[in-house]
Image (spheres, rainbow, N blue to C red):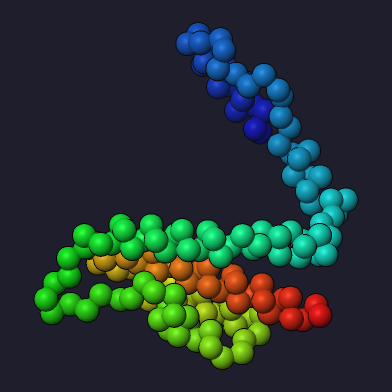
Amino acid sequence: MLDDLFVASDKDEASEEAGARPSIPFDYLSVADELHSGRIKVSGDTFAAEYREAGADLAAEFAALLEQAKLALASEAAMPEEKLPPIDPEAIAAELGLDQPAKGADFGRMRRSFAFANHPDRVAPHLRPRAMIRMQVANMLIDEAKRRALAGVRR
């Protein structure tokens, strides 16, 4: 069916421009069959090693993100009666409950419950930049806690 759609679209586009077609034919069904065949395997050890390596420079990235957030929010004016939610990592970690020991499933629950209350799509428009930064900080804190928990289990 996809091939029929490509042929039909090729006929329509042939009159408009000849260079718009992809130069490499792609068979979507054979790719889907290969992915679902079970012949492609990803080692859990390889995945865990890459996950740990990806977090190696997380501290520098986190510090840069926090400085950028502080600069972006420096000009933000609060309504007199409105208390803005904090963006500092300690307050967000306490809000997440990262001070208590957690299991693997707890990290997903923490992320979902925090996103439910703080996602930029769920807050007032004037709080969206702050909510985006809070979500980024929370995700980084949860990823780091998860990475530490994984490293503690492997020892």
